[in-house]
Length: 339
Ligand SMILES: *Cc1c(COP(=O)(O)O)cnc(C)c1O
Image 1 (spheres, rainbow, N blue to C red):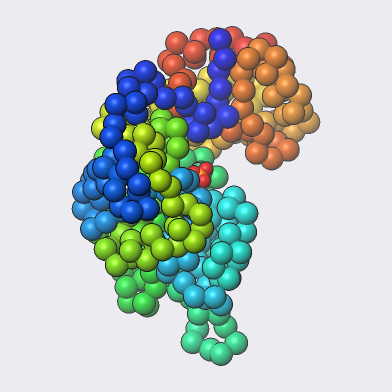
Image 2 (cartoon, rainbow, N blue to C red; image 1 turned 45 degrees about the vertical axis):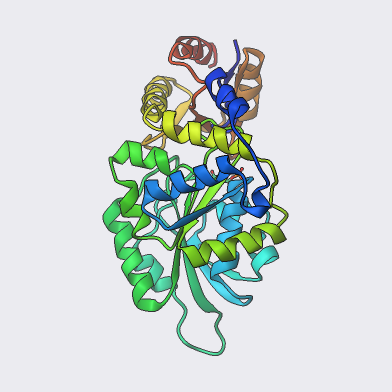
């Protein structure tokens, strides 16, 4: 039995999802004629009370298109220093949009209105023009931490007052909604654009949605084509996404419960020094000084348990649809063989 805790992207479509993919009608989406994609875009935007949506191959593309739509070359994007848009999108903010970045030092990947306010550039010819604020919820490098809605709304008001656009990297937004009980509509009414991933905890094989106002999504479709993301009969992928939104949201609670169980397990091991508070499906742990994390990961791999180191002293485990509660026992047994 393989226990794969490397990421929630490793899930494979279930038989039911494959059936939904197999039986769907398709058409040419660049012509706007794929019924399954149109259906998914309508479902996604209605869930958030937003006007429109566009289906893209990846969350990197939805984020990058959003940044491209909101900025001009030379503008500045404000985000936390751990943000996926800055750390893990290949320098795309510079490459695709020619924008500079103002990094904020947040708390576990989350920023505050005060930090954002301090990051906005003064109106001065020497400075780049602050144009866009990007939040990430849940925050990946923050160990799956969640924002308070009040903090998000405060930042939203600040953006309104200062004429900045407001984008959410919601790759794992549904994890945050399930963990906090917040409503999707509150997010839809606060952000100018939202990116959600269907291929993470929701278990679809491919795809992300970018949500926003009609005009914004019209512009986004143009950039999707430029970025090479205009797909043709991709409705089978969209059918998987629709299935995921309809069936795999509520069950995220199981992933959170399993992550909590792993947190408890790790807290009892002598080689674990500390664990970031576990709020959703991500567990980040720090090992005691002198402990060889790479060797540990190798030893666990020999027992068919996979996860990644994220620094010389820390590792990350992520729960998901294909991590079953029954696997907790063998995980614990293996972890206990390490000293
Ligand atoms: C996974 C992820 C994305 C998008 O990644 P893709 O692999 O391109 O779909 C964006 N933001 C965060 C926080 C992520 O974890």
